[in-house]
Length: 397
Ligand code: PMP
Ligand code: GLU
Image (tube, rainbow, N blue to C red; front, side, top):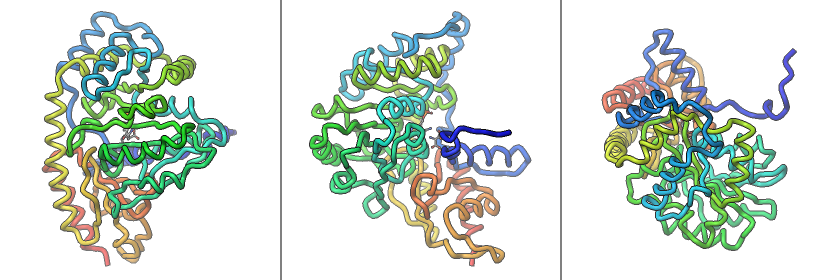
């Protein structure tokens, strides 16, 4: 008899992962699906990183690593923070985990107690709210929409803060909107946070290198609040290494120690081979990353142009990441073969079935009536996807 814990029963499936799997299942049945659902670079891991991993296997780097990661990798991450972000995080303030998702999970588990409130600006990345639920916390959602470029205002933040607020979750460049906060906008948020010394900030900066508007700005660079910031990053997006599973966080020592305690019981250190690969990625230059960013920028412009020519798609101009997030409410209420498209879920299902294009419903990101389209695919695939979308939408009445 099935008897799952209440903790897991109240957890939802990851919609990004679910849509990706659905597309792959259909593809394996021979259906020609263009999968623009999951967010991962379509590029291969750089050759020097692959070589480092092969060397690590031959050199028998096959034993458990320290729970928090190999010292040489933590050193490289510390250097990365100094050189790329002008942030001082010595190795003891860093912990390596099994992907940035794991780093976020660690940080939430370590900071959030039963009944604590976590402020999550919407649209948000799918896993945040589920991890907060798992930790026993309450999600306090701040809404934003295309009119403010999906940015929250300082006034909205202040309104959301209560004596129970423990954490603010920030993500810039953002998944799913691609929104990038400027230094001035972060400064305004910091001004509010300075009045509430009990609020911690988990800053998800995994898309740092996929930023089209200039230098990456980290909220940890505001010295006034740095002692309350957890910076999360990893190698998945910057070095096309999603499957290698290496992420990290930098934070005050007591937070890192607590994450290490949790990780030591839950998973131990990340894969030893992958850590060696991550070391090579961080130790190399960023030529490969720069090339990927150039490609993403070109594709952003391509998909924006194609999407703008579809009557009914309303969207922002993303400053980073590799997603567009159109409002599709103009299509809700329309019919196909007598079936009404009620919402973004129906819309995505329609696209999957009739255009053979997979996207993710906005509801998964706390923004119903939107869909997320990943443009981490080649120009020709993106053009083909939009040809199909256009053709399918013409059939709606
Ligand atoms: N944060 C955001 C906003 C993401 O889009 C992703 C992508 N999966 C992650 C964290 C997790 O990345 P990782 O592959 O390193 O777990
Ligand atoms: N970050 C990617 C996405 O949002 C990967 C999926 C996931 O980790 O949930 O699609």
